[in-house]
Amino acid sequence: MRGETRRLFADPRAAVGAALLALAAAVALLAPLLAGDPIAQRDIVATRFLPPLSSDPLGAFHLLGTDRFGRDVWARLVYGARVSLGVGTLAVLLSGIIGVAVGAAAGFWRGWIGVGLLGLTDFALALPRVVLLLLLASLWQPSAGLVILVLGLTGWMTIARLVYAETRALAGRPFVESAVGLGVPGYRILLRHILPNALTPVIVASALGLGNAILLEAGLSFLGLGVQPPTPSWGNLIASGRDTLINAPWVAAAPGVALVVVVVAATLLGDGVRDRLDPGKVR
Image (cartoon, rainbow, N blue to C red):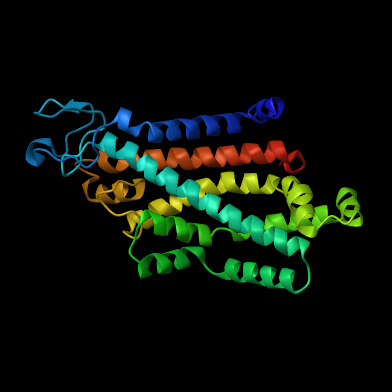
């Protein structure tokens, strides 16, 4: 296991992506130790729109400046990382669970079960995801839980297709046929012999999907259909600073740069994992 991990992170893309994601996760987890209250407001007139690396008249230092309400941008960025990374991770986890279950069932149990599940997957793939996200997010009260549910329920289809293909390929392998010949129940064959060998594309798709989920969450929050203020999220932080790009660009620039870095890191990690776990597809 240690050798596989070392081989994986020998790829510079995977190493850089993992390091950046680990740093972002550490900052999010240690938010109470690294920053103050992200919604604290004191003397708004005296503390609003302070530039980065400045101190307010009350003596507080602001690493990334303050916003229109005198709130510390660094504190809101750090606590926003908790929301954005947490929502993206949970959404990918939910879509992975659904995709693995649907793809494995469709690939192993053929007949009407497989046909029905594949038809459901194809139907869901045909729906425009962004339009569906906007529709679902506009029907209910926006919240972090709703964003996780919506992203998870609209992102499982690719994983299902990948697991289906792997399951079909593995079902004809000699070790599976031997288990069938010995009378091993179907669910045990699926859980113990097929799924552990079919998870490689799931790992790759999840790593690549993490950045996409974080980006979609930011987009929904930017439009006011995701996490609602005053709870900080990178999306609503960017939205709060879009009107002050001229006189206070740091309000939107800080979460915007953080969002780009994390999405690029997730993409680099996904590419590196794909090439290491499936070297036959290296381009």
